Length: 426
Image (cartoon, rainbow, N blue to C red; front, side, top):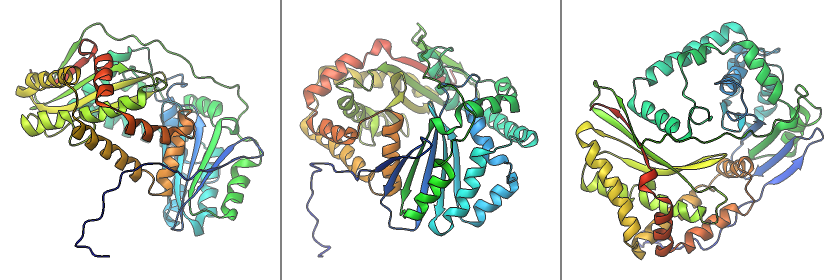
């Protein structure tokens, strides 16, 4: 290889993903296997139906998930930490809108040891009172710190404005919501959702048959968890506030946080994948319209972004930045100027091709490892997408025209519906 000669630039013409192997274990748990690793490391994601959409009380799912590591019938909190540390494992516990996740990374030679710990915390957690109080106090302190941050204040206010306080996305947490969490609340959530009926497992990395047998033995042979009725996804009404601008005064800050957002089309809309191209061109990468104008040309901010935020019942276009309080008004004015440009001026072919190349490059980078492949298939599972979703995404990027960009901007980038939230000094 002559490294003095630049390699040829090639377009990504087609997309072939490694298809996962899918099984249904004897107890009904679905198992997805992505055997694509080159190192002796494996990741396992255990998903349970639940999440913010189905919980009966604020933070119920989040705290149930976080408390799994705080003690089980077989291990104390200290023993869980020591075991995972000794075997070089990493554990992540999280809750999303529709699922709760138990994710762990393990060296293959210690997989059985780590899996033994994970099985215990999933199947027999104790939710000890002392540890719960410590976790609550830690989260309350972080919450109080966040209340001093203008980006946090503006973000939660924007979602309240766009959805209303009766919607899971618009519910504004208060300190008393943390304090209302107790063992009974967590146990009720756990017994409803942590069971084999609503469980799906994804395993990725360098996998052998023995590891699959261990997964089947731990989570796939017998029915586990309390018997509970299926909990369908509830529906919530979206009630945006009628006002356009909202201000949260923080006179002690020099930087103001600016959040702007509006509802856009559903993921099932035939033009949704092309709309992602528009969002990227508008503010989704470092060379976007918003960055070039507001950062590079005007110097109002160090960075500004716009992107699509997905939820089970809706999608948002969210614009986010921080700037000196003196630049808030001209900055917002330039956002609207860029929207006007997209409405009235056709995007040049060269600029659009740069955006397409960026997006196709990001797609390629997303498939570089077994773990990133697992992320993609988990996304498909949690959002009920078909296996050809990523091929369709590539096709939509390649086929998007300047006419598509202008048409979608005129149809969905509505300035009148764009809500503005500013947190900072007047």
